[in-house]
Amino acid sequence: MLITFKSHAAQDLIMMKDLAVTLLGIIGKHLGERGVITAEELPRAIHKLEAAVTDAKRAHPAESSVSPDHRHDEDEEEPLHLGQRAFPFLDMLRASQRENTEVMWGV
Image (cartoon, rainbow, N blue to C red):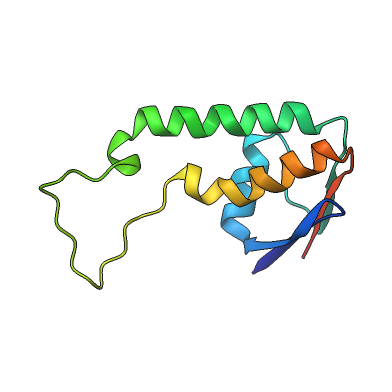
């Protein structure tokens, strides 16, 4: 299932349900059929998400840098860490904060 996030400050952002649940959980929201992050909630939401990304990098440093002796097959994809997965959402939250507008989502 795909979830679409909307804001007047950014392009629509579409993500898989599992990632949406994770990111919303980090900022203290629950995935419902529809939801909103108000302009007043944005500073705290951004702070919580940035902190989670920083913690994830500390907890799993191998995910943020590949060791030189670790070789990937050309067809093998590197796993995405939380920072990479959260970046587009964080970008939307920051743009919305700059424009003092809310972020909404729906199925």
